[in-house]
Every structure is written in C-alpha cells, then in structure tokens.
Image (cartoon, rainbow, N blue to C red; front, side):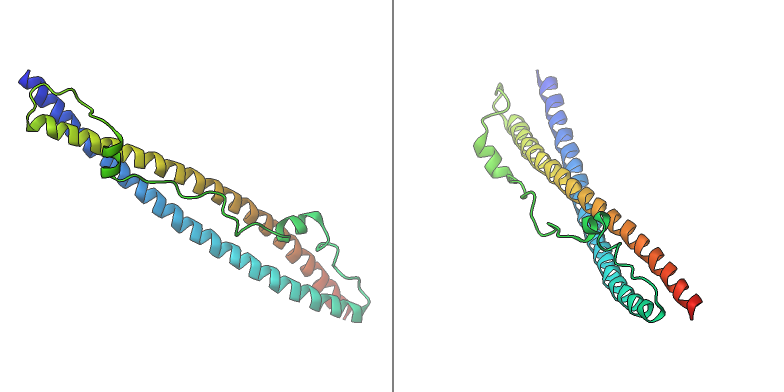
Length: 187
C-alpha cells in the first residue's frame, strides 16, 4: 500500500512538472504571436505608405502625361482589386475577447477532492495539491490554446489583406513604370 502511495505521489509530481512546462511553452507561443502581430502591423503601415507615395507618383505622371498628350492611369485605381485592397477595412474591429484564466485558488474552490483518502497523511495532501494545481494549469492551457487560435485567425486575415495590397502595389508600380517610360520616350 505504501509503495502504491509513493508511486502515485511521484506521478502527481511529474504531472505538475509536465503541465508547468506546457504552460511555459504556451506563454512563449503567445509572446511570439504578439511579436509577429507587431511585425505584420509594421508591414501593413509600410504598404500604406507605399500606397500614398504611389498616389502622388501617379498624380505627377498623369500631370506630365497631359503635357505630353498621353492618357492617365486612373483605371487601376477604379479596379475591383484596388478597391478590395485599399477600400474600407475593419482593422480596428475586435473579433475576439481574451478568455478567462482561473487562478489556482479559484480552481480549488470550484472543484471537489481529486483523490479518495486512505491514510489521511501529508502525502495524500500533497497529491491533492498537485492534482489541484494540474487542474488549474490545464484550465489555463485551454484558455491559452483558445487565445492562440484566435490570434492565428486574426493574423491569417491580416496576411491575406497584406498580400492583396502587395499585388495591387506591384501592379501600380509596373503601370507607373510603363507610363514613365512612355513619357520619357516622347520627350
């Protein structure tokens, strides 16, 4: 009986260690996702700046084209691709709220006893504490997993929007290049 109790105690200690390691991995993942989100924001701001610069360049090319008798390149700005990439966005809309993370005390109050007491000694108390801690951390891991999933969904949408902007910017740059070459040939 004592041997079984000691093995059970050792198992609960290993369980605590394993869920602690999983919690640390989850925290690192959330931190990395947050950093990645900041990078995506910077990329998006850079693309917005390119869009503004291209508007100015296209305006200048259109004005120069009028002097040389060439047509304007406004057709790209009226295209569906341009409007999809640069139209109204819902960037500021919050699509998910952070989930509730229960602390250890709250989890212990919500649950009953995990083990059936036989010897009613300190080893059983420690096993109960370990199992309570495991239960609490598992609840937090579940919440972390939901947060990771939500953040990945948000960032996937962000990447799609960035890719649309990249394609439109490439098309605009190529068209402006072609127009500039025509203007230079006519001068």
